[in-house]
Image (cartoon, rainbow, N blue to C red; front, top):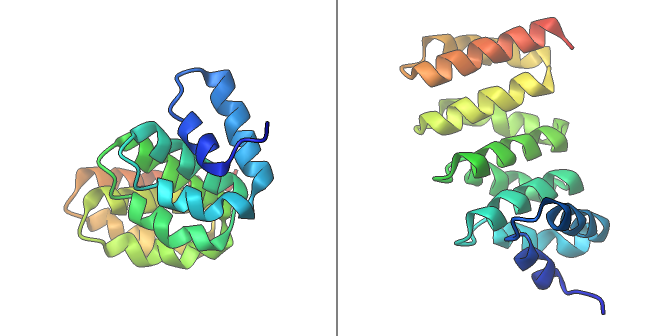
Length: 156
């Protein structure tokens, strides 16, 4: 029996790593077909569904997911935020400008996640904006900017 997209998204709740990886693989294979449901799942009450929906969106790599993933950087769960920022890195170039724009977001967690993602993208074009974060009021953001700058300068 072929599972629906909704069935697959609900299966992301599992604690079984093997089952979850198989589910993520199936969602990735279905790609565009699962996109809207995965975006909607970023608002699910279950943190694992939010977390792994973000991961699947990164695997799919569609630009339509950028804004919802940016919004997910405000999630109360740090693992959900981490997957959202990683997904933006996987989407790559199309997410770059959006990440630069949110470096002045009011929420320090969002600024820090954006800095991390930009450092992971390793684009020298981000250096000026990241250098400005070295004066941020948040120690978390300053440290994130410093690490991002070092990552870009290493270029590896």
